Amino acid sequence: QQQIRVQLATVLEAVISQQLVPLERKKGRVAAFEVMHGTVAIKNLIREGKTHQITGIIQTSKKNGMVTMDDALLELYDKGYISAQNAISFSQDTSYVEKRVNII
Image 1 (tube, one colour):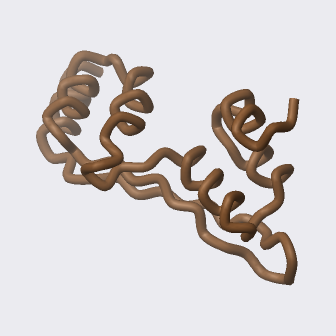
Image 2 (tube, rainbow, N blue to C red; image 1 turned 30 degrees about the horizontal axis):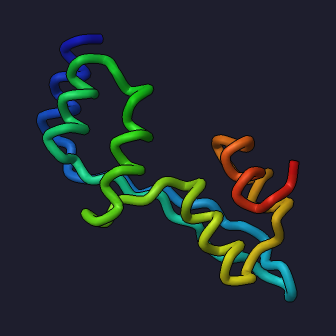
């Protein structure tokens, strides 16, 4: 496993993931994107097997163009594209998103 982590950290440039979330007011879906760049900090976490800390790095690297899926969902909710319930149900950290949409 260590060798694979080292190889991944060496070649990683970026990871972009998306979910298609149902629109609030009309038929269709909108894409929510999570973006992670292969920065030195991210690569070090992967190399050291500390992948549970990656979300924290993404959250503090917004100025570098990174965004978590939860923050992308909250932005779509704030703009009225998706419902609060869909923001919560498609999220990774439901308690974080629930607090942000004022549903507890």
